[in-house]
Image (cartoon, rainbow, N blue to C red; front, side):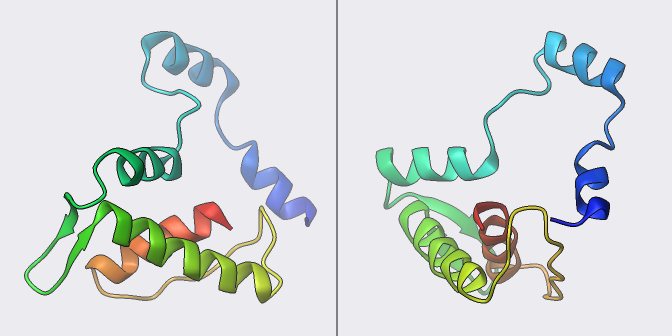
Amino acid sequence: MSSEAGAFRNMADPDLAVDYRKAGWWGDVTVANLVDRHAATRPGDPALVTLTDRLSWAGYRHSADRLASALIGAGIEPGDRVAVFLPDGGSVHVAFLANEKA
């Protein structure tokens, strides 16, 4: 991981981070954790619904896992920056989740 990526991880003001955690606004649960939990407990329920897209929780997780595997296979490592250029919709949210998982 580059030093630039390492610096990016430490951008939050430490005092604000403590305050946010005390207030319950920040925690250790990630979006990926929440999607995985919903995919396990309510797989067929809608996770993303737009005018053109509809993804269940299981479909959302499956699509993100496939893309995350492809990113890892391409050499992406934690802390690397990945550009996402997609219109708003199911695909962009899958890409964001896949980047978190990779």
